[in-house]
Image (cartoon, rainbow, N blue to C red; front, side, top):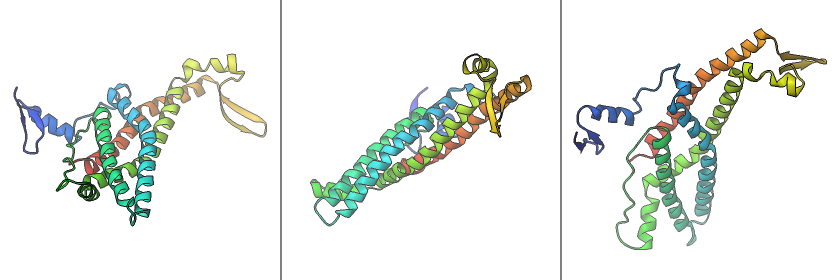
Length: 239
């Protein structure tokens, strides 16, 4: 097979792989089936993406907010515009990092914007080019949006898996509670001195059934969250 470029500059191989490459780039590649999803690598890569979004979003949001706020506040001095220019170039770096992360964990690859090219040599020309750089401003917007997206994805990911896996495996570890925890099972509620524990066979089976439902539903929720981020990458970090 020979490698070549399509009309948009994307590499593909002859012999039918062109359509597969375009399908993967557009997010059309089929995912795992409903029953196979909890055991697929794609699900756990999307899980890792959802967890990483929060720390990365905290850093990028804080950096961009501080730099743009300081640059705007001092725009009338000799510091403001250079600070804003550095912020835009930094956002290009964040965008490159996020394109790499999206390619590794979300399977989405987008072409990088063209390099920043000042019209003439000199610091002032570089500052003007950076301030007028659309890719830098799109990267800044992505960096700001990543924090709320990260809060949602991290919270949903941790909550669903931390409920689904313990509940689904409850019959395997329920015996630990009466032996070492001095309780017959998971405490469901306490009211007027009466405490109800999930300790009978039907109750244990019910907890397990709930956990299994969540085990199979969680990958679908994570796929939806990942889809939102794939759209952000294509819309804000592409050429």
